[in-house]
Length: 193
Image (cartoon, rainbow, N blue to C red; front, side):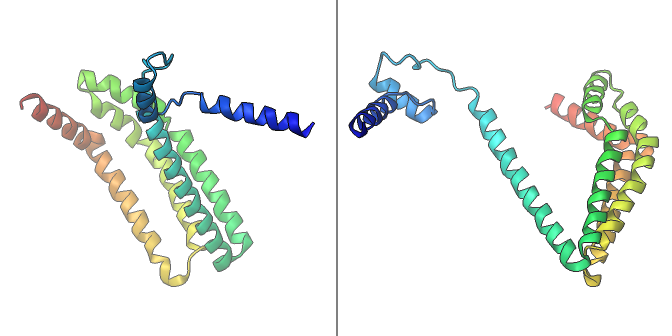
């Protein structure tokens, strides 16, 4: 019985060595050695997408690690109730943003209005009521975040709020006209080069 299992394992290992790799560098090397390789003409156009997915996975992992550290700090500074409040505020912020901004719709509208030169209409649409509905959610989230920080670290949240407000004010200045104008200036500069 043991001898049969050993033979099966040895056979499987030999078979695994004969399986062709889809890795571009290994495949090219093997296709040079084996002209009868059924994957020799395999197109690896998916590699940039795979590399981008890997990059996104690493960013996601680092972001999660940051959240874990924040949660640990939150419990250490304020206790479990403070962490629970912060998590609830985080959920409310995400829900608030999702209620006021549909990224897929915004992207489609931007692409559509780029062609007609009416990009400012997209910003005008979202800079009004959606932004005004979202700002209190940001403030509430930062208030909950403040309780996770030591007193000497709390002013950093004021800076964060000021940066968010400045970014919104920049993008929404004159109903988004600044961003639309900048975009079209770049397009004209590229066109006349």
